[in-house]
Length: 497
Image (cartoon, rainbow, N blue to C red; front, side):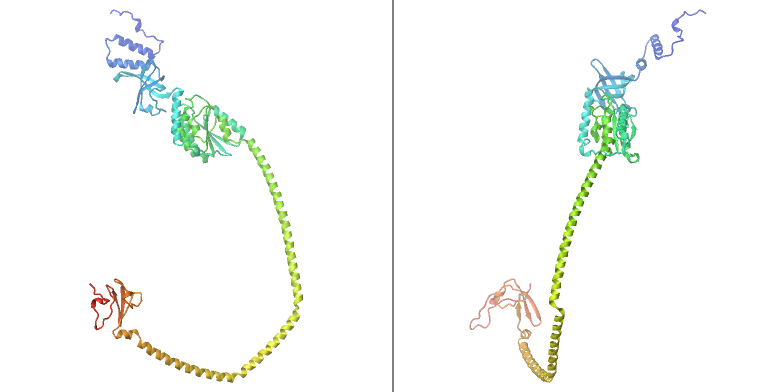
């Protein structure tokens, strides 16, 4: 059997590892040996070549165009001379911190691949960030306008800082220079104020969420922690580095925080949203610590000053009280002297009057007058006793006169009764007469006392008759006429319809 000719390419290179480049060369050689390729084979070759030769992830800077935001994001990145198709699946797009506009310059991070069904080579984006101060400034200004309209920056929402905090929660990175500045300032000003570190990311992915959760957690558990205030801080950096503190989630957490919150982000020239929402903005972490932590030296000076003022006020109050007491004592002594003088004067007057009255003389005179009156009373009683017979005679005369007077009066009353009985209206009613009167009791004596439509009451022997006047005319009797014309009579009893 004849031997085949020697082919050195078939001898493997023992020292060369099986790398992607070697596999690619084998695949290219295999395709070159083939007579033809299908479209699917070519598309898959392009896909595998792109994924193997272009290391992932890659970062591409470009200008956004033709952005379509639905469930997934579809857009293009372009510069002056080229365009790259991009796609961001919903699982990645939901995590993006902002939505760009057409024309924004961004930094897209992802991997390159080929989509065989549409023959499209695309950059599959997993992260996207704005670049350029102009774009970020626009986002910052838009956020500020929105929050200002919602009242996040209003002064009436801000609360005052505690004068003597016992413990302060510091939300920052444990490895940052800002924490060192805060601790150093606290030790210098007042070591008695405790500091509680809440370690969070201060830039990059997830930093805004960590800062917001830290603020919410400290605010909800401040009683257990013994915390009186919150300090959110970090050192300087670029606009992109500080951007976590411009996110809406951080602004919402700061606005809802019930504890006093101080924010010091970046350098003095930097301004972030959380600083505008916070109860106090500090230019640096050191200044923020100084605003929250009182100076022990200054406190000592204040105590000395207050002690001096207290001593002065106490001394002045005691002196003023002593003067008032002395003045009142003098007034009281003067008043007592005046009262004693008045009492002595009145006592002297009483003694003088007592001496002038001479009670013994008055008593003798009274006894003499009493004896005279007693004698007059006895004589009057004796005279009364002597007048008894004459009194009896007068009493008999009086009884006789009363009896006669009573008899005369009885006869007069009997005569009056007969006269009254003769003129008794009821006896007149019994003879067929009646009495007309108004409902209020006024007697009707003339036709002029009534008018048509008026009610009247007619009294007869056994009761009264209510009636209403319909019409009436005055009538004078004529000679030779015995009866009045019916039309001239007053109809006192109209028939009921």
